Image 1 (cartoon, rainbow, N blue to C red):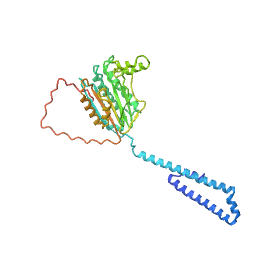
Image 2 (cartoon, rainbow, N blue to C red):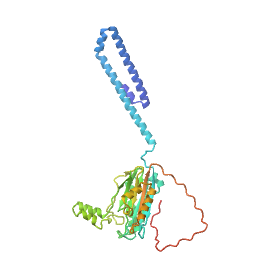
Image 3 (tube, one colour):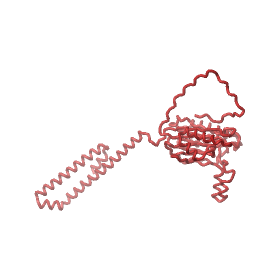
Image 4 (tube, one colour):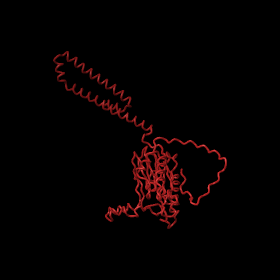
Length: 388
């Protein structure tokens, strides 16, 4: 037992040296004892033969005890060295960044008016330089085209969310941060609409918040949030549309399943910012674990109604900025006469720090001041929020 205690209280290198020395000494003593017994047996003839064939109980017990001690010492030494090796590996892993850690984010942006008279989509992305301090936030608001002032509502939402994100003081969880920003957006819209102005106009709202390897979101309305990973596309949220309520009615036997897909009101929103108290809000129970190579996309219905899943996956197989340009080309190339406003934000998770951009050189002064272009009758003021 003293040998075992010695091995357990030593350091890994000292344990190995001490154990080896003790085992060698014990083995030498056992060998010497056996040698003496053998020599004595040769001198006593028949007595030695009798001793070897039937050794005294004391000798047998001593041999077994010594063997047991040696085996126990070897086992303890093995366990000790394995644990020491694990501790060393753990220490080295802490000093080196994990290959699965998201260390930076590349952003792709897509924002077009489509065939509509006004741009009622609005979006913003927080400064990527703040990724390590507070994460990165993307927000997309799709003003409701069938109602008046949808552009003003979407702008109010985005401005409130972005300002609120800059003022957040170390939220404990993703959920707390996103809920606080949702409350801020609703307060801004309620103030804009005034008492009794609910449902006069409104907007969808989606936010995606990435911090470290955790991604969470909030969704109100029918805009979508998707994860692209290893060539597959997964929708993370569910649209708040009347069709989903019709589907529940069909499951409960209150109407036919066919009527779920033929009802003309199926795409109508059942929850949106501007209706007063929200009826639905989507967010995950806990942050989704993401890894380098993943892409997260926030998009208004003007994108997913205009492209196929195959086209969307094909575009997202490219880097974020390139993917946004590919989608812009696909949608504009289809020339749909009723193309809705379309807006998208793509987060590309990277394992390495994004290269810093060199400061741009100041443009050369123009030889003569150009005359301002005359404003055309069809021009409208931009409703997009400043991008960070």
